[in-house]
Amino acid sequence: MVRSWWVQSSLLHLEEAERRLLLKTGMRAFDTEVGDDLTVHALEGGSRDASKPPLVLCHGYGQGAAAFALNFPHLTANLHVYAKDWMGYGQSSRPKFTPKGVDATEEHFIKYMERWRDANKVQRMILCGHSLGGYLSVAYAERYPERVAKLILVSPVGVPHRPEEFTNHLAQQPWGRRTLLNSAAFLWSRGVTPGDLVRGLGPIGRRLMDGYAQRRFKDGGELDRTAFGEYLYHNAAATAGSGERALSELLLPYAWAKSPLHDRIPKLSRTIPIHFVYGEVDWMDHRHALKVREQMVATHTVTVETIAGAGHQVFIDEPSAFNDAILRLCDVHDPIPAPISATAVEAVPASNVQPQAATTMQ
Image: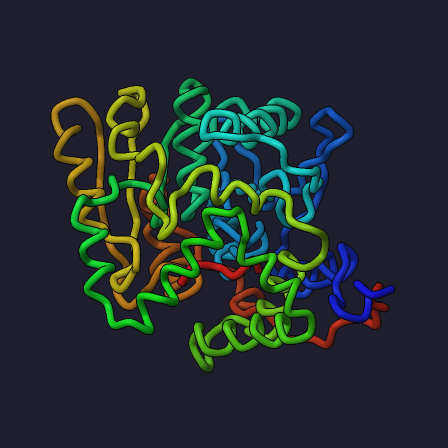
C-alpha cells in the first residue's frame, strides 16, 4: 500500500504508456519465452523479405523499444523492423539482477538476446543500438558475428578510455559543481541508479520525468512529450530496479567504460560493416569514433556521421534525418515515404488505470 501511494506506477501503467506512444505506428507487440521463466518483449512492423535481413533496434539506458515511436512509420514502410526491450527493461521480464563484473553483465544481456533471435528465426540482422544499447550491440557482435549483417552504433556509450587528465579537470571545477559531481560519483560507485532516485522521490520523481520530457524535446515537434514522459517514468518506477543495475557493473562514474569499445570494435569480424551515427550537439563525442575508424581503415568498412541539430537522443531530436540516415545505411536508396496517417504520434488521454527513468541520458 505504501508503494501504491508513494510510487504510482505498475507494469500495467507501463503497458498503457507504450500503447499511447505506438498509436498509428502499425507496430505489433509480442513476447517471446527465452527460458528461465523469462520473456523478452518486442515490437515488429514492416513486410518480411527473406532476401534481406531485418533491422533490429536496441534502446539505451532507461528507455524501451517504444522510444523509437517516431521512427517506426518511415522505417517500416521500407524495411522489416524489430525493436526489443533488453532483459530487465520495459516490458521484458525484470528478474533480480545478480551478475557482477563486465563479462557476466554483458553475458546476461547477450544470452537472452540470442535466445530471442533464435526463437524468432532471425538468421541475420542489421543491429542498431543507441547509447548503452550500442555498447551491448558490440558485445553481441563479438560473440555472434555470423548473425550480424551490419552494425549501426547510434551515439554509443563506452567508446573512449577515461583520459588521464580527467581527475585534474574535476579538481578545477567550482566547489559547488565539484561537490555535486563527487556526490553523484559516490552514489554511482555504490550501485545507486537514476531509477532508484526516481522511485525514492515518489510523486516528485514523476514530475521530474515529465519536466525532463517537456524541457528536453522540441516544442511543437512530432513527439507527444507527455506520453513520452509517462513512458520514461513507468520504465523506471513500475518495479524495483533490474536491468538498470548494469550501470555500475559496465561503466565507471561519469560513464567511462570499464572495458572501452575503442579496443574492442577493431577486433570485430571484418565481414561486419560498422556505422557510427551521432547528434551534432551530442554529449557523446563523435571524435572518439573517428579515432576508432583510423585504426580500422585498412581492414574494415567504417563510417562516422553526425545529424545536424540533434543531441544524444538523435532519433527523437531529428527523426526525419535519422530515418534517412538509417535507410541509406541499410541500402534503401529510393525510400517509400511514411503513410500520411502515421506522420505524428497522436496525444490521447491515458486509460483509467488504477495505481497499485531511470532518467535517460541527455
